[in-house]
Image (cartoon, rainbow, N blue to C red; front, side):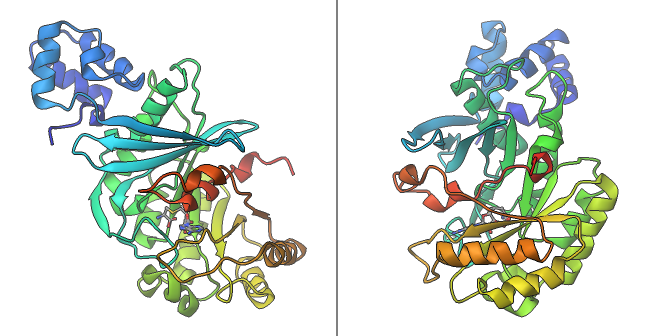
Length: 355
Ligand code: SAH
């Protein structure tokens, strides 16, 4: 695989352009063009310069391979092809305040969560910053969005992969995403979901990137959490909560917990009460999701009635919570490589919620 040109910041592009004997303004043309989702061959540059660039850089970091459109709602599922042939997934969901895109941060994942389809084949490789960004620029262009009038308004790092296991590339991506003159999305419109990598969560709180931090909790004590999430053997819930608290102190952003309701595992009222004791008084929100059954796994989803009862118990117990609705369920199965599960897990930004 050649290098990825959209990995470069505007400053890095300027050094590159100068080192190739070109004028400085070419860096801005490249930056703008890439942010518009263009391939190198489509940039407004002299043909000879483009040829030189393509010798060292991939013409396109991310190409849309296939799009699945839901008939039930406006959800679209994208299959992307990377320049080395790897495939990754993404979803675009329409909400009343805009379009939220779910992006992948790794090809596969090494966290090994028992309920998740992304980790079945382990980690293939990390995505580069430009490959994470490329999913957004490609979809924005596909939808007819521009840099002035974006079609993608919110981003969630909830596709395949553990974002904090690809820390440096994800941070670079977040900086590129908000860079002036580019796609220019504020971190406030970005949610990062993690299985709870405590040292990286702490590091993130020092980066000065006030995004919405989401933690996949899925259990109320370490022992039960370790049954479905191997990472629980490494990091304790108490330390995750401390890292969340630090994040709140630094950013003043309310943090979010994902809690996936699995029948016979974590979804009865005793668990709801344990969750209240754990989170009572904290500046957090809980996103409940009924498990999306992954056929390779034995786990079963909690039924709708149980999920509603869990939600009511939390709410009565003073915990801010929502039960995620399913979107695009008719296209989840259409995609062989990727799983229906991904379509239900996207979240709205509770900081924007009016309720
Ligand atoms: N690795 C990160 C982000 C990717 S997964 C993390 O663990 O948070 C995004 C969310 O989907 C996580 O909350 C994850 O636990 C959840 N998830 C994965 N598989 C699921 C399934 N089958 N049903 C419901 N939620 C699932």
